[in-house]
Length: 240
Image (cartoon, rainbow, N blue to C red; front, side, top):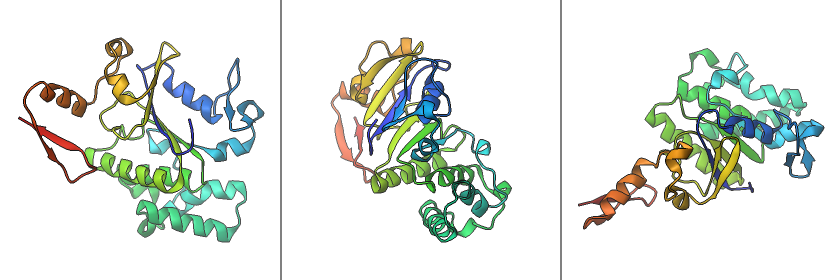
């Protein structure tokens, strides 16, 4: 995976998706072979690896450790010994980008699910990682919070050049993907573009569902259809 790239990792439950992501982040070490983050071998346990690779889990409660929003955003920076003034600047910047600036003194226990996931993302992004691993990050969010989360993520990727790997059994909310990987029975069986993936006959065997918008487009393309441009993201609504 390269800087600025958005990659999806798909597969059945138990296929090894999360394990592969944890290996890439250095949270798990390989029993054979090597995993490198840039020039660093994860077996070295170099703390620079955890700075370069941020991880966001599906349940934000697994990552939130501060009593207040500001304390949680400061936790990782304090562990790294970041100077106080630098810490304040980073917290101010990331809270503004995530819409958390008015919540810094709020108890983390009082936040909604969507706000808690934003906070968990902020606690990762304040460390200024080069790569971000997301393990089913929207599985506990409602449709509105999910859409907002992806819009924030896309904006950060554009501004910061983040390389992002999304681990998910779902495909419907990942339309911006530039590359897809499929893991089946602990092996990578596909590495290519999403349009190529949706046309593969092995999808059902791999446990992958084609996104709803792709299924609809294929269905209506077989009939005489007119295309009407939508205002959002240049997508098209196809109607008979």
